[in-house]
Length: 213
Ligand code: SAH
Image (cartoon, rainbow, N blue to C red; front, side, top):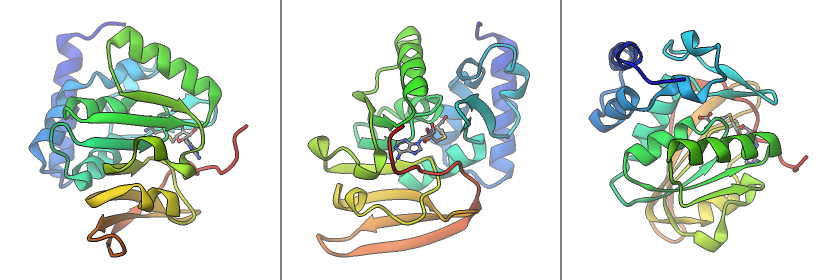
């Protein structure tokens, strides 16, 4: 599959849709205009790539809806060179958006097939996260901590303590919390012990699963 003018036209429209839905962060909209989302779907599904919808990527997982990716990314308030931990690599689309913002990305996936497939895809596309890890995101990645930002792209029943512990002071953790439906939640680490919690609207994610298969 290729990236063509037609695709970039569709991306511009998608960015306009997200702007109309309240995404105003220019760097995030620029990432939406740039990252070729159709290449993150299996071929044959490219007509679905630039609708603002989640889509199945196999192994019962989904590529998050563009609005959700943009919303979470904006809440992370990233600057170039920030160190970011992503839980739930999935298709790699969110990873690519983070890389477009010139951040250093560490990403963890617990589903072996997806982990392998997306790793190959990153190499083919020339995307360079710092590390792509096969493992359990509940534990985070303590050996590379602390992080400026952590984004969880699956619904967590509660906030994993390990992730809070791996934030820098001033760092942001963006995580959808809930079982049937999730409330987008952001924790800003104010000091060693103090976190400021802010909640946003409700979203629907695939579950953050605890054990490896
Ligand atoms: N960021 C992805 C979203 C994928 S959906 C994208 O842009 O495509 C969420 C992903 O989280 C799935 O791939 C799922 O396998 C993964 N996941 C679920 N529980 C996990 C855990 N405990 N640790 C790491 N990844 C997990």
